[in-house]
Length: 203
Image 1 (cartoon, rainbow, N blue to C red):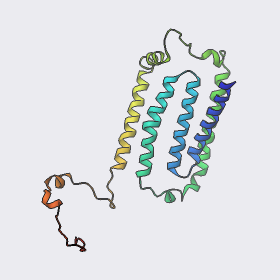
Image 2 (image 1 turned 60 degrees about the horizontal axis):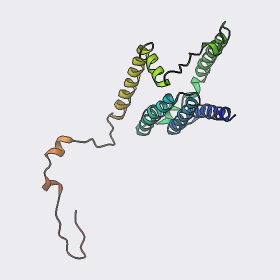
Image 3 (image 1 turned 90 degrees about the horizontal axis):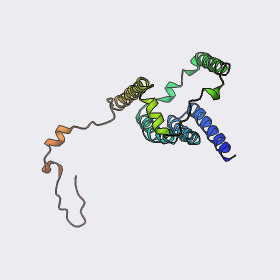
């Protein structure tokens, strides 16, 4: 009974957070709701007995990816009012794509349940002589090795893109000049003053 209540609670919070990620107008709030969705998805993994995936989701996605998204969104100087000014003309295209994706999801679920073998029988057998970390590592680095490497390349490209976006030239900032800082002598940086009593320092 407690496990069922926990499942419905985590599932409801995950779905609600996912909806708020898309519905939030503020991109910073969207990233925070995304972190909330990751935490609740980790709770679902714990209920399934996959503790390693739960900790991996929190450490990697919440501790690295989502925080990186948050920093990038807060550092970008984007005029969101200008981006939303012409969004009304794209509503028909957006609803059309959403309808196509929904039809594909419904067709996939119907085709999955219409097979000769039920969904419960399609689940992978759980080995009792080893932990889920060992089973996951054996499958991940043998059967899904190519997909795992491609996912790593995608994350690498995303990281490089985030770095490029934050390192762009801006007119309202003063870039650091390392060579000038190295050549600077102490007498150029420190000025000793001996003002009289009651007299301020003139710069």
